Length: 217
Ligand code: B16
Ligand code: MG
Image 1 (cartoon, rainbow, N blue to C red):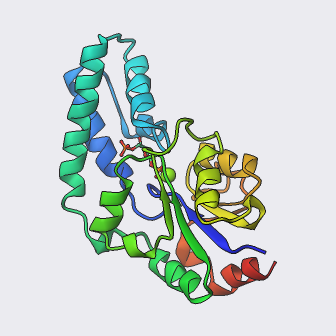
Image 2 (image 1 turned 45 degrees about the vertical axis):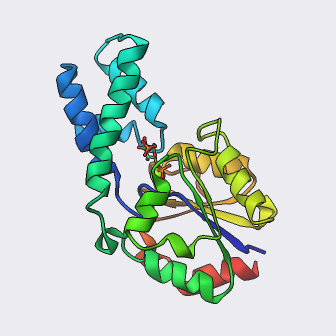
Image 3 (image 1 turned 90 degrees about the horizontal axis):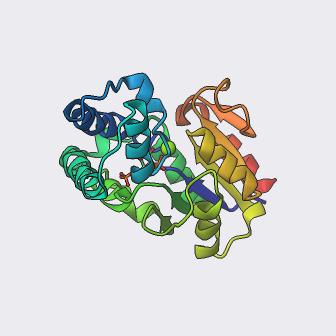
């Protein structure tokens, strides 16, 4: 029986990828590295440090450790300036209905995100109070596809992994859910999220009946 619903943040609850892109793009320009929206896809679900490593690889560049830290900080400061302006209008379609319905059926709601900025984002869009537990980039040592983030989430609400479902937009996130022994639901394209148990284009396609059926399974 599913009683715990674990949500990824970026690409599932809100589209913060566009803000990550703006900030990484400015940094890449400064480093004279060609960085496009297609390249930005490589950064979805990936940690901040790994993201900068990928961008440097794209440009075949090496920089000193001090510069690496300085650039990470600079990128995050710019990203935070975009987050600062976020509000409830940025919640992705159907998410609020799903959260309300899960609350109604007394499911546990957990966040499992790679972002170290997860809490301020949830606060900005007014969703923080929905969550029984939050696991983010500050709590994990191993990035997705390692299942650590979701296993800690289950543990925090005292749920068994077999009773958890994960909503994810990244391939690495689906792999993490699968290796945690949880039901995986992809939000995005079927061709990309092939390894998910179910795939929906957004939460508007996930009916209350479907969520309820999961609970009774
Ligand atoms: P931050 P998710 C991930 O969020 C993003 O998809 C990824 O692009 C980003 O690099 C990562 O968070 C770290 O974010 O710089 O805010 O710590 O999809 O796991 O919710
Ligand atoms: Mg994501």
